[in-house]
Image (cartoon, rainbow, N blue to C red):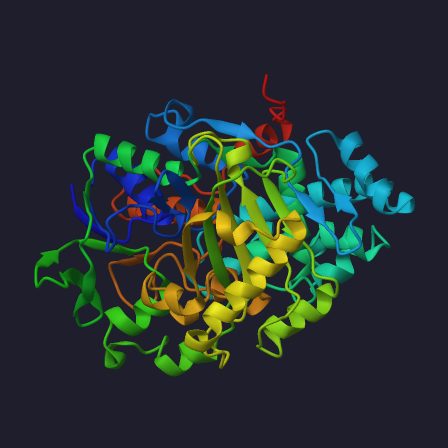
Length: 517
């Protein structure tokens, strides 16, 4: 069987590698870091474990399907815990919104914010169930040419898209209180976009949470990448850690192999690129070889926000926090304008805090807490001098955290601390423009208008990850790996499946949202 080389052991590369190894291909993954996972990796220091990037799993059935297609059961490898509540949103006025696995509990929470908005929940769920039925088949198929958008699935989706509306405007159809709308729009952070600019189609994001649940993985979401790596090697695949690719070798328009930073060269029949799209275009291909994705073209594109990350190991417990917490800025819209339009640091940012220790004993020593703090900030297209601002912004966030936790002594409880700025995302994690969530998800950068899974610039080249179709976020990144694997199987005359329409009703009939016993 043909030899396949994969650049990067992130979730998209691991998904494609698993599926292709299961079909008998000789698959070799090259990972620059000393761990698998990429942004789905982890930090482990002094008894504390932190996920680097994503912290909770949605649409778990997609990864279950990928494992099943390789003859394995995801649940033999990881322990998923359904969150209840999924998270809490804490507003500047002290009000809290707590989405729950129980719709009545959630509606009661909405009523505590604004009694008149609770009745909008059922209408919202009904409307977005239809939208999701039309969206999922579209996100599970490849787009190799402009003609691929002329199909019945796209036509059906167009009937519910409402492209003239923003996500914020769309939620105004169901809810009147801005705080409730925030509860149904903050999920646009998964795309690194403001709800005031995000397309209305992404009202499906909270629906996905409320319909199929939000899960923690015991030990952290990094366990997913580690489980995928184990299955991949069990299937005969090879993972090379500390093996950074320096260049994709080209012969004309064909990608023929990889050159590593240590000088080794490897030849492959097919190459899958899982490394960050924007960074890789500029660093793995000489400018003269790129006709479509020139440096000027890449610079002109719209990218997601970045994130300022603070990982804290604390010598105390914070049981008043939920597992997932989002602290909302007093002026929510102003905060997003500062990130996207003004491109400056906010003095009153919204931020996310994961307190996994309250649920998961594996992530912190007994009696201590592992806090993961994510603050959306402008990407590196802004002129923020992070070398000057890093410590000042870190102090601002610690002050905000101390205020929210009512603990002025929090600095003295820090046992371990790590900060990641947009510069670190670019220089250490190889993320173009420091844009943590990759290319933006405006409509002219989606589907066929997004870099394609069958890469149009070079033959024998395939793209997976958040910078390609279908987009960022773990479920869609897994789908990108599955789409690329299916395209390669199709190329070599093997059985493949796009658009699992027969499974769609089974997905909607799933009733597995049950609290842990």
